[in-house]
Length: 410
Ligand SMILES: Nc1ncnc2c1ncn2[C@@H]1O[C@H](COP(=O)(O)OP(=O)(O)O)[C@@H](O)[C@H]1O
Ligand SMILES: CC(=O)OP(=O)(O)O
Ligand SMILES: [Mg+2]
Image 1 (spheres, rainbow, N blue to C red):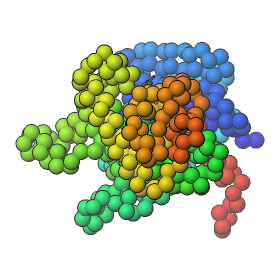
Image 2 (image 1 turned 45 degrees about the vertical axis):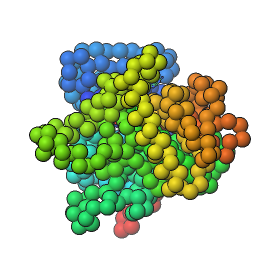
Image 3 (image 1 turned 180 degrees about the horizontal axis):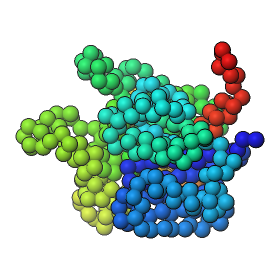
Image 4 (image 1 turned 120 degrees about the horizontal axis):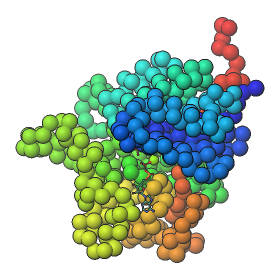
């Protein structure tokens, strides 16, 4: 008998988010987060869903290996240990899969080498993803480990959307093109939006706005991505918590030539010290809204720049799709910040887009419509669930492999 449990790991540079799911009914058994790995003040917060009572550990956790061992101990305490025969696979979020990986993939040494080769185009994300995979493999070498790529959903983008208008030879030599990220979320949310509308994904055109700390928009036609706002790296597109999103690339030459900054300094500036935090000193939308409500001008300007960019992308993807059935807001900001949703579609009534204030004010974890009754284009809040999507794809792959015919020649 093979188990039905899947452990999902989302390994960041200094954190690991995890969930253990039972895929016989897609239920969650446990979830948690290890933060500030490598510091003296690391923290593990673990919640077994049977009790719903979170447990916390604090004190130094040196590296990802120690973090995963601590997670394994917490799970074991709930009778959900990683040595259990119930565990069928471990699913890993991998941010950059390049052009090569269009599907979830069972990890072997060749797959690891390819993820490693992509580090130069995902320096903030892929190294941490790799560490998570290596650690999990060492812990359970017998278990299938599956990589689910942020980029995979976007590989259907037509060349016209995926290519930059730069010299083709140079671009090809350095694999410069638009890959897009948050694909697991865009896939899940576009499907869930079709479901909310009571229609098949193949019939529906959706603009998905994934607004977390990182943020991206996508245009999804009949279930397939045709454009997305992130590019070669997760820096392009919307204004984010700490990333600038779109800028004139000449800003970089200017900072180097006139500002005397190194490329590493500029990288840090645009990825970590820009966006909302660079504009007003806060990257949490709750705090920004609180300041706006108190009349803080700097926070108001940051909010306005954020909304202006978002509105531009809604308009752009409306034009890309031609016909839009729904605009779906998701992730931390999209799911929770009613003022962001209202402001993003304000003034777009001629495009058939509007928000009903009463519906928009409702707080809920369920997918819901916030457009007025009978609206031509539906506006929706659709909570994302990247972990469930990763677990679903991971489990489908290992289940499928189990029943697949042996390779020819055997
Ligand atoms: N109630 C809320 N109101 C406004 N913004 C919120 C609320 N709750 C969370 N957020 C925003 O969501 C962000 C985190 O989103 P999330 O999708 O969890 O991001 P990530 O996965 O990138 O860490 C926070 O930085 C905060 O700005
Ligand atoms: C790709 C990306 O931006 O991911 P995150 O939002 O988790 O930083
Ligand atoms: Mg997220």
